[in-house]
Length: 121
Length: 110
Image (cartoon, helix red, strand yellow):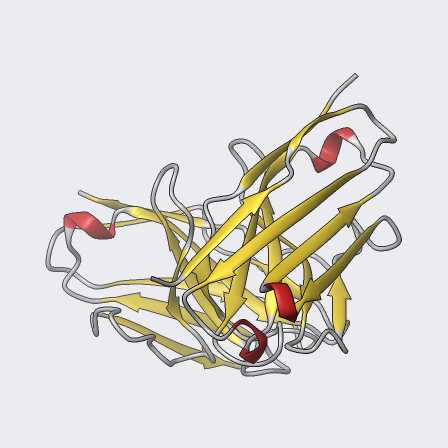
């Protein structure tokens, strides 16, 4: 079964850090691009960051550029999101998703259920 | 990176066809064929319905179709069914090497 499982969410104070992980199974992980997408409570989808199949190409939304870092470990079938200098507006459900091709700009066809990040003092 | 513009809501009766628009610029929708559409039911993860403007993933009903003209992409749902009631989001690659989602459209089946 093709599956993505996120972990690492939690409650953190403004200015703090968290590292999200996404464990992939059931498919050849290093054949596909990956993205992180978040959804604040009651709001729409927001693309956060993406990475191509070998980690050689990455992209970030302006809202997180310079604070978040995406990476992947193909040997461990895992995707990561290092989040620093967290703000209240980063509070959301964070999904990882894999694309239909090798880069992150393709459609995202497999999604995890998400991990919740709450930034609050 | 402004969100792509979608109508807030679209409604139709069972069996009818509806179309959801997604308006961007020449720096996103108009400049690339990397437009996707997602369906999201309440408290569920999004589901890919269309990618690369008009391609349907395996398992997605052929009642769903996508197209693009200039900087506006469209998703058409034909033969509307009760199970189609959900939120729909478009997405596009941009000239800034990012992706951007649309504002979202709530589809109601009357």
